Amino acid sequence: MSKTAKSLRAFLDAAPSVALVEVAEAKGSTPREKGAWMLVSLERIFGTIGGGQLEFMAIDSARAMLKGSISPHKGEMPAKRAVGVTSGRSAQGALSPVETTPPGGFAATLPSRGRETLTLDIPLGPEIGQCCGGRVEVAVRHVDEAMAADLVASAEISDASLPHVLVFGGGHVGHALASAFALLPLNVVVVETRADALDGMPAEIDVRLTPVPEEMVREAPSGSAVVVLTHDHALDFLIVAEALKRDDTGYVGMIGSKTKKATFKSWFLKTAGGSDEQYARLVCPIGGDAVKDKRPAVIAALAAAEIMTALALPAK
Picture: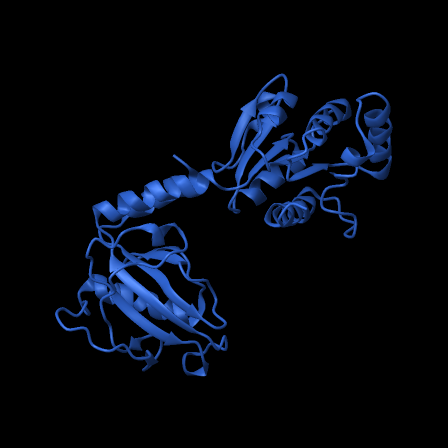
């Protein structure tokens, strides 16, 4: 089971009653897009629809529905109107059923199966303490067993489509990178030749112990990011060469200095059969050199941002 699906299942198993809160419409400037969703129980939340007063109001309404304080209207649908705030984080306004959930995010792919849904129509202005200026329609509905199963299955599919990152090396920077990546929507594998170097990796990160790490590059999905920071410069060079000779990698980075990069270039062009065009794709040092701080956590933060940017941008 994927990491998101595991967390989702744990949340659902821990809560006897849960509501799905989803952005059904988003007009103008809004914190999140149409299809963004979260789950709300009486004590906890899973995910976000953008935070701020919008989210507080949606959570309050979801919990009121879970407690039975408000319920979907039955029979004739009353006309929807803007939601207003009385005091604190409480919201008032018309609630009406919605036939289906709109497209966008994996929750939105679920059929409504006739489930009654509360709808909040919320203007994001000074009235609620937000200055976005847009308008959001939020749909709230109970999560039953069938929907819960659909959510978990959809999470598996969604996670499988996330970008892949291979981190070669489980040293100090490798561990720091793994911790940074554990918070991001990525499929990450840390590859090592030393078993003890994989101890203490975050639970969200996959690990692979192999005597021939460069083979993992050949097996990586198209578009993968390859980050190389092993304990051995010669091994670094072998792995980076494999990655650069693939024309479909999304990012190839190596930890190092100007001297290491120059040494690699000479070896790559003269001995490894590489080309200048392939070499030009190498990022070294990872994370750039604008910040002169070599602490592992700082390198990891800069490199994680760099890699996320590279994976998010369309290929040239």
